[in-house]
Image (cartoon, rainbow, N blue to C red; front, side):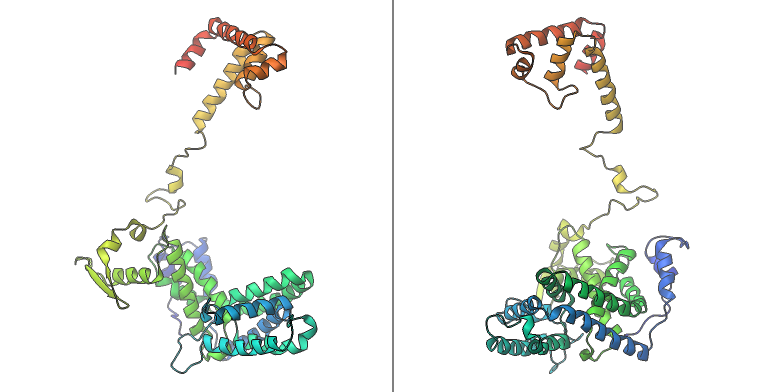
Length: 413
């Protein structure tokens, strides 16, 4: 895999839709930082990868020698043997598997033989810590083949959950050293992420978002790379970066996620379609026929998601600023409600103390909730019928009082 050295920050920013670049823009600053890292020579890359593999194996060994981790590995291998999971979900293969080349299933077949033989001759709890001398071969086999990052995370979490803080501290120390070794390898391959992300601009995701997804793929590639692939790291990382970007486009650019083959088909049609010609009725893709007009008429296919933070054309504020909130009250309504509340409290204050207390309890004014006639009667020591009569007397007093005109206008409005 080779880099495009002519890929400059100005080109990237122009394509990202940000207009003229400014030194203070985050994307421009990021591009300048990427260009400050020199590309790796073949000798430098080999030395970094050698140290990376050593530190990664030390980190994995810190938890793989535990009983819980080895039991989790054996459980996954058994699931593969029962055809419940694919071998590629556990072990990464070479970028392109050639005829006669060893793939993930071949490695798992070998691992299954090693583990099953060990379990058969080791009793009920074959992975106990006291058998660590015998389990070293199992750990070495797992590290030599190299599992994917996500299964390794499950094994680590299982070890920490069962064996506690001692394993967690050991894992944290070895992981810090691995991250320190991995950092220069990632920084000096960031231009590869820009090259991949640029292929999908313009599109449903911005250039900034594509870079972030590509960086995740690059970090995953550094964790799962194995020297047995016999390829340059940049060649291997290119596929991880591309896969991460494509997956993000499939999952985050539409409200309803579409199958992978369908998104590939739509991207292929959009790329090859001539705007001056009508859309083809049927397209052959991977041995099947698809009716393109039927697909394009589906809103979940053609309608992408729009961020509420995106600025409207020719305006500084985003879409969220123009959408009314139906739940919270508007500022003017809140002020009017506060004025009305103060006016009602002022009007009630003109009543005798007993009538004032009845209205406050009955309508929940300055109380947690409105009360029933019976509840108010129990508080004041009279019947509910008497409370109803006093309530009518208080309301009649308000209708004939000094604020009667305003209260009548508010009740009719």
